[in-house]
Image (cartoon, rainbow, N blue to C red; front, side, top):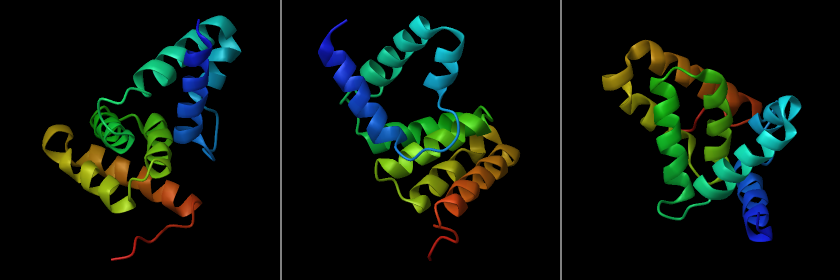
Length: 130
């Protein structure tokens, strides 16, 4: 493993997950298998999320759309926080969630909007200014 990959993983993790509350996936993985947790973190954060083929905000908006349609509110909360950290606005995030209606249905949109509101309340950014 290269020092470059470790540094890239740390830098990308800090960018995405600074000030993120609750248990982060890496912490959960590490609690069960430290070596595998490290390998997963190096790959997901250091290789996949650090790729520069698309911007960090675009990557997070895509992730939010997928997690909305898959109805994964815990993971969605983490990535809404990450999206805000990389510069996505609450209105952009809400628009992406609304866009998933056609593919995921209104119950998934409602769940995702509740998660977004929860994150914005925690950050003192609710209600969204018009």
